[in-house]
Length: 161
Image (cartoon, rainbow, N blue to C red; front, side, top):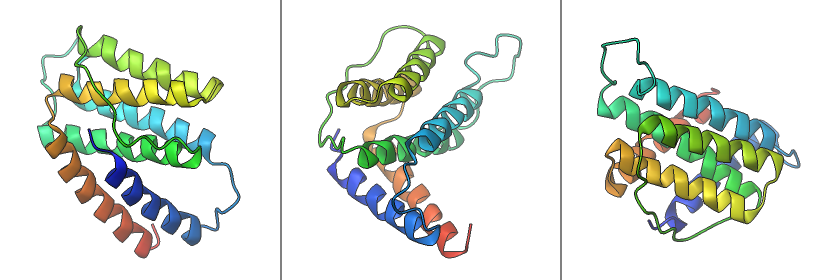
């Protein structure tokens, strides 16, 4: 997946947020990792993959991909803050069930909280991108949804969100 453009677009949003909230010179990595964990939980909740007690199916694709790109915003932002900007990541679809895949992404997110290295960040990002295959999203779907949500995020900043 070509990521250079996404990192650039995310950097513009991050700059706007930093300016609007006077966040220059603040290390926001811990807050962004927590936000990522929360968004991953929201994503898992929309898939309902772990809700063995319920007969209700997953949310609509549009809602699930919206939560996916919320996570993507934070993953990109964490990378930018720490100088981990990868232009291309090779992704291999992962075998196994969705619950195991989510737990793997959660685990890798906790690992970068404990020891943030470019290798661990890349492992997280790769696993997260692989999750998109498990969810049935194409890179085109992801890019389009990311751009739509990015526009919403810029509008929110302009409106004092």
